[in-house]
Amino acid sequence: MSKTTQSASGNRPLALALLAAVVLGIASVATAEESGVRFGVTADCHLMARRTPANEAFLREFVDEMTRWKPDFVIDLGDFACQAGEGRTTPELHDAQLDGLVHHWKVFSEVPCPAYLAMGNHDVGWLRGGSETIVPEDLYRAAHAGEDITKREWLAATGLPGRYYSFDVRDFHFIVLDANNARDDNAPAPGHDGVPGGYFIDSAQIVWLKEDLAASRGKTKVVFCHQELHHTPVDGSGEGGDVPFPPVGKETSYVDNGWQLRELFTADGRVLVCFAGHKHRSRWTVYGGVNYITLAATHAGGSCAKVTIAERLHIEGHANQRSYTITRPK
Image 1: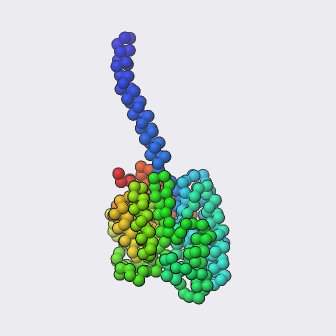
Image 2: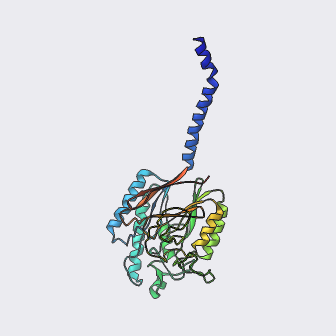
Image 3: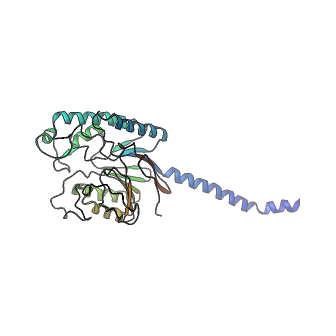
């Protein structure tokens, strides 16, 4: 008995050390979970005024699921409340799209967390884009890109801080971009990625982005933009991801100077992933160590994603959206 007692007494420091290791391990897991972030994402809801009840049903399903899941925030990647009909902008089309935006933004905002939007090409109309000051009458008078309400009206209806903006959640920094712009006059020749792209990040936005990246140097960053920042051929060029890269057509429907942003993100070293919509199909590629993930369209079957970033980047896809689990760099 005394020998057994002696043996137990002799191992007590080891037992205490093991117990401490277990407690520290639990604490470290809890800390990792607490310092992580999770958010819900939709894209291309295509809510055309109040004329698409099936699409609104998908939106409401997403809101109900987010109410149960309780993420840190939700975001839609653009083409949220689209034009009410085809053709040249008229007062009737303008009023219907604005009314639809107000209505559907209210539905989206029923989630019990902050809600954000990225601006899509079907969400707004513009002449040159950028920070131009135009009114609906300008859209009535001229042929233009985009749809039937102005960027200023979109911002007034949603209360979002700008056509591009950023926000923080704990140790993570989130950046939302606006690619619905014409090329700057002094821009490099189009087609850097092999095919000229139809969208553009204006110079004022790039200046802001450089400052924003520098101001959040120590944070892990996530970027949202409606259009892809890359043209990737079907053979899956890039450093990883889906091969073959699902073909979707729309060869010019990407951000022509996206390569400039990709260089900025790689140089920053803390940009983990950039999410896009627009192409309506789920796909993933990697450039410069940064993941670029395109979401499937919500209006096609209710596709959406739950995203969790902790030890890994995990995208839990729903409907046509693929699921991915990607290891974060050390």
